[in-house]
Image (cartoon, rainbow, N blue to C red; front, side):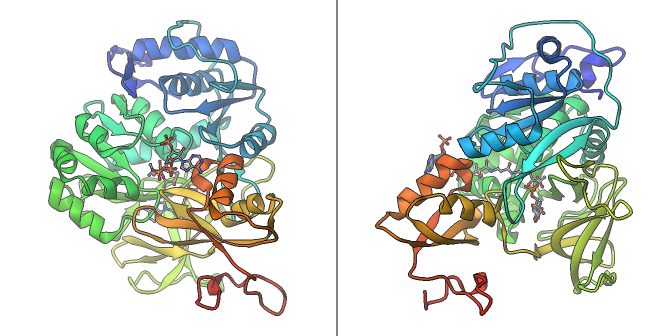
Length: 456
Ligand code: MCA
Ligand code: AMP
């Protein structure tokens, strides 16, 4: 992978500010030297885990693993012991870099080269929640990552003249693949703000900004910060639906109609509006280069692109996953079934209108499986039954909401903290309802649609 466009290509230039994270910066030459030092340490490992804190160390460790030809496994910075152990065991990572393993020293330098990995070699294993069970490891190759970042660079006219700003977590596609590898491959400096706080975005002076809808909505709530973004070239939103009022408020405050794009950990970004085209509130745009989409009805037939008929979205393209760690992906003729419900306009514009399953929750842009949170709650000695759903939340889009039957006196807060300690903190329920019983059908299955009704 031509990782650091400015330093590894012919006629390369050293950029003094190639990457800065939470106020600490490395030039492109220093970044490459530090990453090559890590690559020398991990050479021969097939999978290297990185404790992905928002730090320069994470950027250096990820690059080092990639340069060494290992599959890099980002571990959520806030993962509790159960989740962390699952990721390390399931991925087969032989080495852990970062705070919970071998420390990364960003001041080291090496110039020793490494053989370039083959395009089909695993580059990243990213863990993401399914409806039930523990998170699954999604395997992306060097070829799928390159295709994924090149496609958005083309759609967004992303060039070395840009300066990318974001403060998203470095263990998911948004912050890591687009937000770090995308910037390095485009050759544009990256300013990672540590946290995605409005005042930090405002002070960073970028041309290109990434955020999840919660971040954009918090920026709109601070008009002075929002107005500072008027000087940018492009604001990009993704990971969850950008509410139309936030789109409009952002437009009013910054003068920019944000680009919205759609993707998944499994598929990277497949649909986006374009830098050189219109942006429509409530729409995620058109397929990026190399991508085809189709919408299907329950019987599998394709539904018309008439702007009103809804169907399940399938995508096909060069940026799709190679498979999961222990199972192949279900890619019939290269098509991936997203589980998202969409509408397509006659001119090819897509709108995401919901998800097929209520058991996948999007909160603050994080994908959270209801089953995983239920399992965590059931591990508490006082919990007899648990059902978890997403409920509308003004700031987070959806809030993780738990209905729990307990056998002994236990405070709601204790259950929230219990989940936060066992899984990633962001997976904790924001609301816990203690109830006498869960609504069940004749088969004994919990009727989630009835949760929240007054009888409970
Ligand atoms: C609160 N905290 C706790 C507890 N409660 N700590 C321990 N136990 C508790 N019970 C602390 C946390 O440690 C944290 O502290 C602080 O409270 C707030 O945590 P949290 O609630 O998670 O933060 P938030 O402010 O609500 O976060 C909002 C956010 C965040 C910043 C928007 O949700 C976020 O970063 N979202 C981005 C998700 C993302 O990148 N998704 C992309 C997936 P402290 O702050 O001190 O640490 S990839 C994807 O979706 C596809 C491919 C795509 O299309 O992009
Ligand atoms: P993740 O696995 O965290 O990558 O989450 C992927 C899911 O996020 C998709 O299946 C969608 O449900 C949702 N998503 C991502 N981008 C958008 C968007 N722009 N609009 C609506 N939903 C989105």
